[in-house]
Length: 320
Image 1 (cartoon, one colour):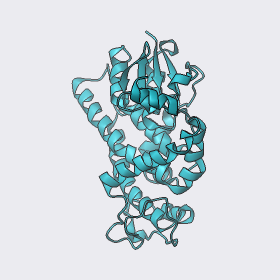
Image 2 (cartoon, rainbow, N blue to C red):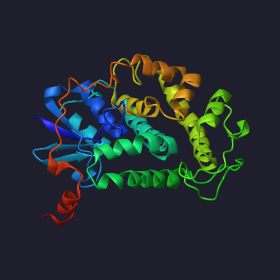
Image 3 (cartoon, one colour):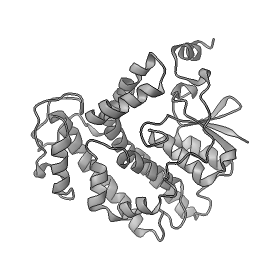
């Protein structure tokens, strides 16, 4: 059976800017034959009933949406990267996949959509190219607002840390350029190299920008330390040995989104290079899985009915 995988489109070096969509693409590259599926960069979350991408469509009907539902569909069709795991490892893989999705999504959203320089110079112009007029001008701010709401709700990103000197009420990270102030070494966890703090001080925006970067620096240190520990205990190049699992493609997709594009403040990339040797080696040794090459895959043209247009939105809402 040939199915369609609908994803957000490409911005910059990646075949999809969205880490979940990228994870679904990487999974299929590792587990399936190109003749089994077609990748459709529709960039239209309204195709699925719960407004999520990636989504799988079979015979014009959406059968799975959201990364975990999509991965379950792949496995039900016989494309199972976890088949060789023991029952204990399968349980660990589920737990680790959930940890990666919950925590690395926060980093990916902040770096990509809330960091002012990347949002203005790369993300917003790239998204405008993916979505038809006139929604192309509303979509970037919609995704920005959704990212801010998720991060602010979970991690109170709008508030400065108790010992930070650059809080500004409930300012939005990456939007207001206030008087530039440097991040102090004492404001950041000891595991963060001072050279990295210096680099961020040279490139970040204003005070509200620093507040967000500071919180993400500390958060990134905690998340990356857990992954570093898991990789150090593995007996192979992947999280569970010699073969990649669904947790691997989730981890690699987020690491790619957070390190590959040319960010103004690439603090995750710098943090990995300076502190986390196992994660850096993990990326280096898995270039075959993260080759970012879709030449062997079938990339279908987007049908006009699948685009995010006002006409299709009205049709979705009214059924006509």
